Every structure is written in structure tokens, then in C-alpha cells.
Image (cartoon, rainbow, N blue to C red; front, side, top):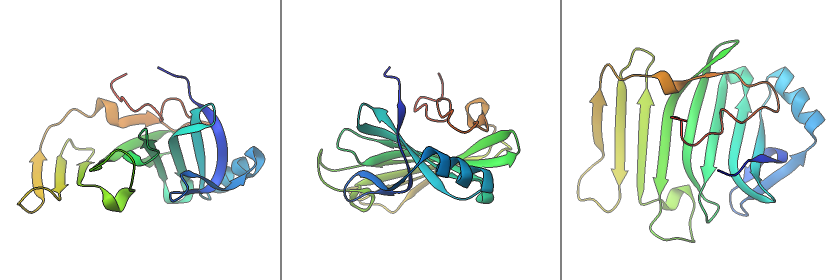
Length: 168
């Protein structure tokens, strides 16, 4: 697996151009982090961004977006900060696109959202524009949640939260 490095700190991601929007310095990102204000981290190999980390501590939120080969967001892990040291991954969202090049989230042909609760209850919702049925909702109970827990990362240490295979 390739080792990701920080490509840029930014205030937001430009989905249309598939690049960081409004780049900020590491010092500014550190200040935003310590104040609980939102910022993003673009991680990649060389100049190619593969992963986005969206941090907003005042909302107890950390999101990790994974990009496909076309630079589209195709997987997101949503973490909630449950205490000063622990995160809980409470939602995983995946998008599938009808073609290999064009489109962004709104053009996805299939969206799967898996919501996790700390008590082991999990609900999966699948929206498939190619299917002849409404959204499919499936619930599971007593699901092991070992992979949902994560330590709150120290600023700059994004390796653990940016793993797209949570079983590793």
C-alpha cells in the first residue's frame, strides 16, 4: 500500500475542480484545530489527492473521504468524538457511479449508507437508481464494533483514521 502524505491543508475541497479550495498553512490549520474550527487535510501520493480528512472538533466531528481513480468521492467514514480521546465511526457511506470519468456525488447510481450505534445496532440503507424498488433498509443487531473505535488523532497524524480498510 502507498504511503499517504499531506498534500495540502485547506478550508474546503473544490469538488468541481477536484482539488483543495482555499489552501491554508499548516500553522493556520493547527490554530483552527486547537480552536475547534473546521478545516480539511488533503492526503495523497505525489500531487494526486486520494483521501480527504474533514475536521470540526467543535461539532465533535471527523470525516474521512476516499477518492476513486477519477477523483470522485466514493467512500466516507463519519466519526463522532465521544470523549477527549476516543472517536466512534457512526456512519459509512459509499457511492457507485455509472461511468468511469464523469460526475460527483449527485450523479451516483447507487448509494449505500451504514449507520452504527454504540450498542451494536446497525442499519443499512441502499438507494439504487437502476433498481425498480424504493430504498432497501436492513437492520442488524449485536454487530461487533471493534473496527468502529479509533483514538482521536494528534494534529498531523492522520494515518489511522485514513485507512480505507478498517480491518487492518
